[in-house]
Length: 415
Image 1 (cartoon, rainbow, N blue to C red):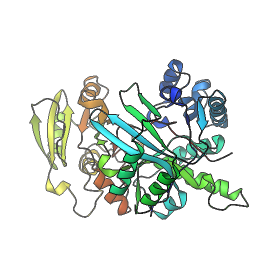
Image 2 (tube, rainbow, N blue to C red):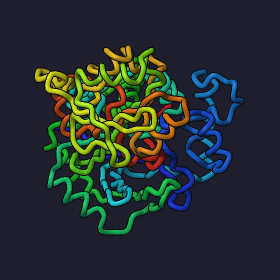
Image 3 (cartoon, rainbow, N blue to C red):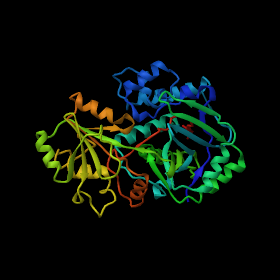
Image 4 (cartoon, rainbow, N blue to C red):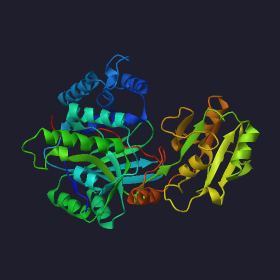
C-alpha cells in the first residue's frame, strides 16, 4: 500500500500565488534566476536559489547560502506572502499545457516506503546535488518543492479528486510560459479520509522527477532522527512532499542530444560508421522528428537524416537497453564518437523537447555543435517497468512537461 498523508501546507495567499510560485530550482542556473528575481522580488527562487541575494562570486553550496534561504523563507511568512493551513489538508494540483491537462494530488509520502521500494526510482543521484538539498532542507526546516510522482491509474482515486474540484480553485493563474496552474484545497475530514483510504489500495508510487529531493529527504530524516531521543516515526521529517499523477496523464517529451564534434571523422566517414548499426536515409520533409521508437533524426551540415536502428542494435535481454536513449548511446555515441559517460563528457549537450526541432538546427548551424540527434519520447510504461525491475535508466532519458511550480505547497518539518 502507498502511505499518502495530508499536511498542514505552507502556501501563498491566493493573491500572491502567481508571483511567489516559481519554476524548480534545477531547471535554471544562478544567473537566470537572478534575472527573474530582478523582475519579481517575490519569486520563491529567493528561497530555493537563495544565492540570488548574495554576490555572484559566492559559492552556492556554502553555509551562508542556506542561511539566506532560511532568512528569506521567514521573510516571506512575515510579509504575509505565505501562510500555513491550520489543519492537515490534501491539495489537488491541476495544470494545463496547450491541450494537455493533468490532475495530481499534493500530499506527503513516507521515507520508510521510499527505502523499502514501495516508492520506486529509476535514476542514480549525484552526491553533490543530493547534499545541496540535504543542507537546504535542514537549514530551512522545509521541503520547498515537491517530488513529481506517478501511479497506475485508479478510478476510485480519480473520482475523489474530481469531487474535490466541484468548487472553484483557491489558486488559479497562468504563468509566463503559458502553463495554467490551479490548486484546490481539500480540508473536509470525510473527503480527506476517503482519499487516504483510496490510496491505500495503490500498490506503488513511482518517482518521475525529483530523485535528488527524495534521497535528500531520506538523509535529512536520518539526521533529525539521530538528534531526537523521543523519535516516534510520525514526526513531519519522516515524510516528504510529492505531487502524484495517474500514469495516463503523464506527458513525457523527447530529450534530444547535440555533440560538439565528430571525433575526428569526416562527415562521410561518420555516416558510413553510423550505417553499420542504422539504416541511414536522407530526410527531405523538414525537420526529422521521430514518430515511433527505434528511429532517430540526425541533423548534420544543414541536412536532416532518418536513422532506423537495425535489429542487431536493439538488445532483447534488457529493458533499459531497448530504450531509444540506450540504443543511441550504445550503438553510436559511445562506439563512434567516444562519448562514454554522458554525465561528465563536455562534448555532449541535452535539449528538452519543449524547445522544438528549430533549437537543434540553431545549435548546429551556429557552429557550436557539429550534429544533433532527435529522439522519440520514452514511454511512461517503460519507466515504470524499469523501476519495477530495479534497473536504472540512462541520464537525461525523460523530459516531463509541464513542470511543477515550487511553493504551490511547502512542507515544514521543523528546525
